[in-house]
Image 1 (cartoon, helix red, strand yellow):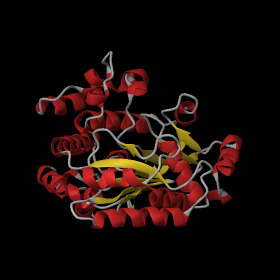
Image 2 (cartoon, rainbow, N blue to C red):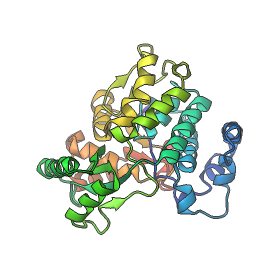
Image 3 (spheres, rainbow, N blue to C red):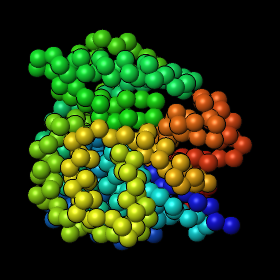
Image 4 (cartoon, rainbow, N blue to C red):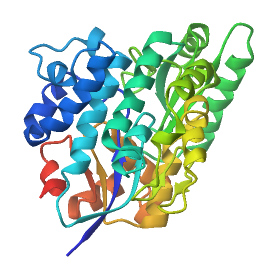
Length: 344
């Protein structure tokens, strides 16, 4: 019996110390694919991803860099997407932030090698420019109860800070029960100074992250378009849900428009991951939501997005956990206790 699934690809921040060796541990049979990525890296004089993944030590300063993290995450995620059990039918693909690039390859709109070129180029450009930064702050509490008033207040504060002279701050990603904010140092510090620490760790600065999905990235987007032509893109094999909740359908995708979105709006405007997940649930009603590795942190944002959308009548963390324990429908391939649910 076939199980339908929406495939969800992660973004930056998911290849950390516990993930070192992910490619060698889970995907020895795909080393030829990884070596083709190494060849692309060699052309640019960059370290091979097989060597980076096979290193004996993990250092945050190195592995959180855009030109290192992005290709490693892409390789791990795409390999996971290729490792799904035969009874799983992918009905749609989406991703968070950089995960959109991976989704393009997982859905067939980019070849594995061209997807790698896009990710490696954009990750390298982001690192070279490193314009601004990001922080994370939740608007829901530990119970995941929707609090639209709290969210509106926080976004109002973001707008107020952004109006100050010599301050830039904006919404970067709508991420389940969390807001990812991006701006310059003055804008980020102003938010941190006026918002209390919650859940022992927020507001949380993200190391080596630029002000993704804001107008500050316009120079990176322009350089990306100059280096990556629209001829890299083709019709997807699976429907794709982008960071606005728009669905790109196989056989009906304007590949020029897809290129323009991917290296334009997607880079310089807010990314609504919550809406993408809710669209996936409502339009495709899958049996499973499968989050590819590396890491498993995106699972929480997926669960929160479903709860905030009232999927299957869920209204809080407890109702999600009840349904998940009875019949697991959210599978994180980066979790050892869940991986076999997707790989068979």
